[in-house]
Length: 272
Image 1 (cartoon, helix red, strand yellow):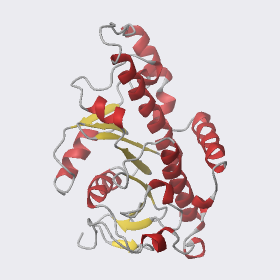
Image 2 (cartoon, helix red, strand yellow):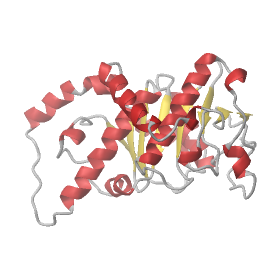
Image 3 (cartoon, helix red, strand yellow):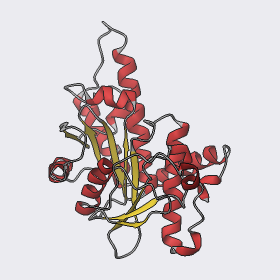
Image 4 (tube, helix red, strand yellow):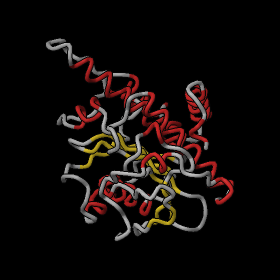
């Protein structure tokens, strides 16, 4: 833990962004995950899901070691590349930091907790979007008022706000609240999704962000009464949405491939 940086770095960011390629220094399996995680950052930037340098996505490094990849603290989402991601172990030691910037300590606390407790989840994505935080601050949380939100019926965990995530003790409470779920709303804080792959975690985040957009838009109508589907319809959609929970359906790959085509039209330097 002593090697984890929680301080912003004032210089050297330009060099960190353009860190030399790691492709020949890591396994093909790790490189594939690096490229996918870098793509996730870039797609999130395109969709304006960023909070400057203060949120974080992570992915488990394939292999026997408990290592995961996360963004360097100080880089914007649209500056992330496959090679400038930082490799850290569960105890907080920086295994490989090509940027020299270190990582956000709050990001370490949240992501290490889930990677340590849930080996079934390969990627963890966390955002501070306006509508996501707005929903997180509502007593009833995500409302089942749209097709997008119905897909999360019975699948959302909630974690109460404890301040900026600097306390290692919060990891146990966060994991306990997550339970066996892979989607969490962090009260007064933001959204978190995880998945069996980067693609799966991102599909869940994409749908959750949109569900929150819809909720805030519907509530903005003021006195208009919201319509909630009947219980039998909720149960029907829960059954239909099981494939979304598992991350094994063909829709995950199709969703991701379409996002990559969109991203690649803006450039492919994230693959460096």
